[in-house]
Every structure is written in structure tokens, then in C-alpha cells.
Image 1 (cartoon, one colour):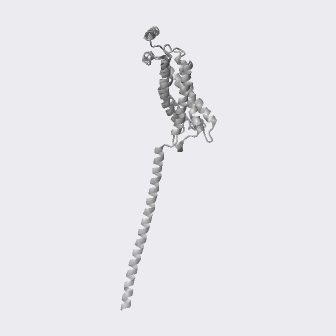
Image 2: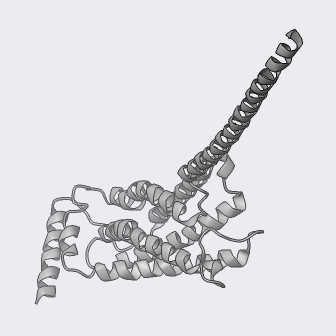
Image 3: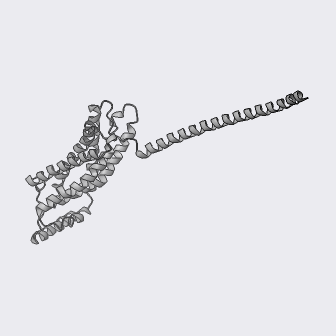
Length: 280
């Protein structure tokens, strides 16, 4: 009964929108020539963003191109898998596929990012055990091992599968039907809708998400605060050592002055009787 009511309500809404001159995306709007062009353009922009991030790293801590490729390729594989899954899933729902794709994408970039963070931290914790070092994200050994990179790629793709399953289950809640009724309502043109959900929104969100996820995946150098504290601790130890040496030198100097004053007094007391004896 509820399913029939929802389907009827959505159909009435779509007919009302079409009668007002506001078309919906077709089932193949995300996979036609224009849709694929936008997807390739988005992938190129995301790749350029990751290149720019490498050049923004401090020169002393900048990753080599090989390590950078190992770090970013994991995220690239996961992003491609999630994107293709979202395109396919969007066409399985009733209603506007552009709207369903946008909802899936936004959930992947928020709730999915949290799941990725938890998974990476868990793998780094497990990597402390002997024999599990290969699953430590960003650590490939010296020289870098392609086996460690492949292991981490497989693990990251598994994390993305967990993300997609979780988001898909979350999307089964009924209130999403109400969200789809108005989320893209102000956009009248179909191609503008496709560009909005496939390029404009994903570009800005992906730029932030890729930047943050790359920080999760790369091997962390010692933090600036930790280096400063260690330098301060070293300077403090040197200062204490210097003060200790100065104190010992001062004590030694005082002892020498006391000895010389005692000798002077001793010489003074001995010279008086000798002088008196000579005078007498």
C-alpha cells in the first residue's frame, strides 16, 4: 500500500514538473556521450588536484613521484569503483537518476569518508603486529615494494566496497523519496542537471575529499610541533649541561681563591716573627 502510494505520488510530481516545462534526466543521461565527457573531465581535474597537492608539500618532506603514485593510485582505484557503482545504482531507482546520483555521491563524501578514516586507522593499528606490516598505508619499505602497494590497493578497494554497501543500505530509508522531490527542482535544463551532479558539485567536493583522504593514506612525517618540542628539549639539556659546567668552574675558582687566601694568611703569620727576630 505504501509503495503504491509513493509511486503514485512521484508519478504525479513528475507529470506536474513536465507540464511546467521542467524535464527530468532520462535513464541514460549519466551514460550518454555528454555524461561520459563530464566524467572524464572530472577525473582529469581530480588528478590535477592531487599533483598540485604534492607541490604544496614542504620541499624537505615532499614525496618522490613513485611514492606519490603509490599513495594516489589507491584513491584513484577506489574513486573509479565508487563512481561506476553510483552511476549504475542511480539508474536502478524510480525517478530522476541525476538526483539519486547526487545523493549517493554526497553520502559517499561524508559518511563514507568517516568509514574510510576508521578503516585506515584500524589497519594501521593491526600493522603493528609482526607479519602485518604490508597493510600500513603509506609504508612500502626501502626500497618501495610493489607487493606492499598492491596489498594496500586491495585493502582500500575493500574499504570502498564496505562504504558502498553501507550507503546503499542507508538509502533504503523512506525519507529519501521526499528529498528527491526538491533537491534539483530549481534546475530547469536536463544537461545543466547532468553537469551540476557530474561535474560542478563533484569537483569542489572531490577536491576537498581527495586532499583529506591523501593525508590519511600518505606516510606521516614527524609533526612540526613534535620537532619543535624535541629541539626545545635538546636545547634545554644543552643549557642545563652548560649551567652545570659553569657551576663547576665557579666552584673550582672559589676553591682556588680560598686556597690562595689561606696561603697568603699563612705566609703573613710566618713573616711577622721572622721580621721581629731580624730587628731584635
